[in-house]
Image 1 (cartoon, rainbow, N blue to C red):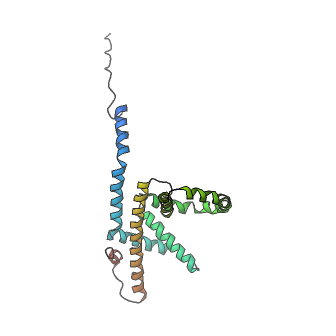
Image 2 (cartoon, rainbow, N blue to C red):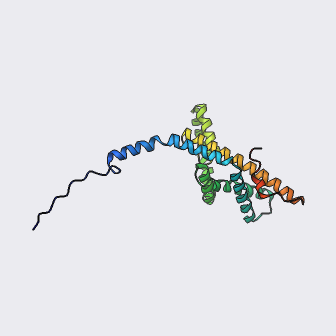
Image 3 (cartoon, rainbow, N blue to C red):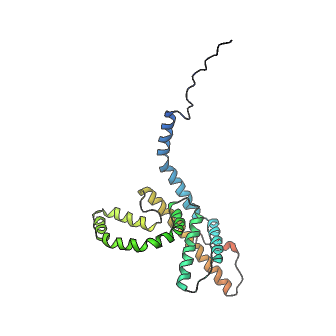
Length: 208
């Protein structure tokens, strides 16, 4: 009976070796600064294109048509505003913190409504202490906290991420204003009985 030839000891594959994993970890830790900056610039430039504005306008009109109107004018205004923000978040495709926060806030609205009474009762007792703590913070940190409250989903993030999210959020809001202005003019012409302008005009005031 032939003797079994011992198998040679193979070295671990370079893609699973500890050294490779350490190098990969270092690369992923070094990558985000430049990578996220590039991604943020691409997103901001996207909001400035006429095509993105036209897509947003079309989605917003469809969403408003599906929404059932209410009797109160203030309620209708809130519904339009909430719909406009929700469509804006959908247009961002969840690639930013602020867009994910807007989409999640709609799902958790009912939960917050039930907890509102308890939270308001607790805030009365904790408010003086929180104000004293805020006064101790430097002016720059207080301003960053205020900015984080203005941008959805950006209360507790790093300074660089906050700036990126804020820049993208402002660019998206500017596009939203242009789109809603174009929709208003579009509907005004239709209500006056004039000739309906082409739909591509909804994205024509990008550089105006």
